[in-house]
Image (cartoon, rainbow over all chains, first blue to last red; front, top):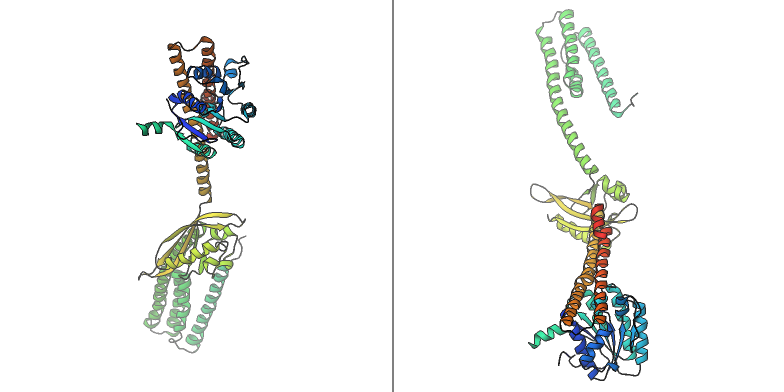
Length: 188
Length: 332
């Protein structure tokens, strides 16, 4: 089995750092870890099409009916509305924080009463479209929502890809920051 | 017409005095020599006239001495058929004494002129310099302040001279600075050079930053006899430093944002493409999934390019003078 969050606590929020080369694998490993713990997962994807993610999850044995998506990539990449997908909301582009916020709010509302974990993949690809200041605000908004609803959350970011000042701010929003490469180095 | 000055007044007094003395000398010559037939004694009075004339007009006074000598000699020789030698000796003395005093007076005047010139230069330096300069006794009582310092705070000499320096308007706005100055005066009086940054209120009420220093003037024995306070207005320098600091901070923010929004995203896109290549090689991705994923990477790259241009524009706007060709290259 791949990487898992050591002693993952219920309702806790994590910022997980991984190398750019490892981000895709981390996404899958984390989903598997979370689903095993009976979570429903809301994946906010700003880096890969949800269609591709779905396929990858299915290939890795993840029960896809437990996965919900807010996809900020597909519609933007295709330039038109994609065909509707089950448990998936499309947002016009990764820089449209208003629509992204609405889609997240609506999906979390839909999942209320269930054991839910949000996975944001990833902070750095959002930085292509919006400033660090606005990303910080958005993550603050999402973490507030999660805490109010008593949901868990994981924010994926590329290690060494965030300014230390921004990282300090994000650290204050979550319960724990995990650098997967450091853990891997320590294990070897 | 030139105005009548105090110097002209002095000149007139001298001429009147010398004229009166000349008349008195002639009068004595007539009364004592011609009427009373006395040819010696009274001539001592002539030296009053000759010495004064030599002091005031230096060697030019010889004219008076020669005239007086000729009168004395003529009266004695031609009217009384006296021996030539006695009046000639007295007359020669008139001229010699006048020349000697005249030479001494010239030397004195030259020395005085040089001293005055030197004082004038020192005063000009003291008053015309941009720096604030003063002079204090070793207990901190201000005894001199230059015009720049007085003008800066809009005060008169009479407002500040004779007061402890820390009670003057340059320091009274801050009890902390007053205390620091008191300590500085004590240390400077021991011969220590003291320097610190202070603030002084200007005449318009604004507070200026000043590079203040205090040093002692010592006598031959090395004891402090005076203290020289100096101040240099460094407000503009401080403003420039603050602006530079602010500018550096702003550029650091841009550079950090650029690193986050350019360096790592390029790595993310590169990795996304590498993943797609792997998927294609493994035959794990269909065309309908591949195309939008590639389209997304193209859009990512477009946005990264736009971010570079935006960043360049921000830097160019804040940079000031940039050649138009360079500006176009950086922002288009």
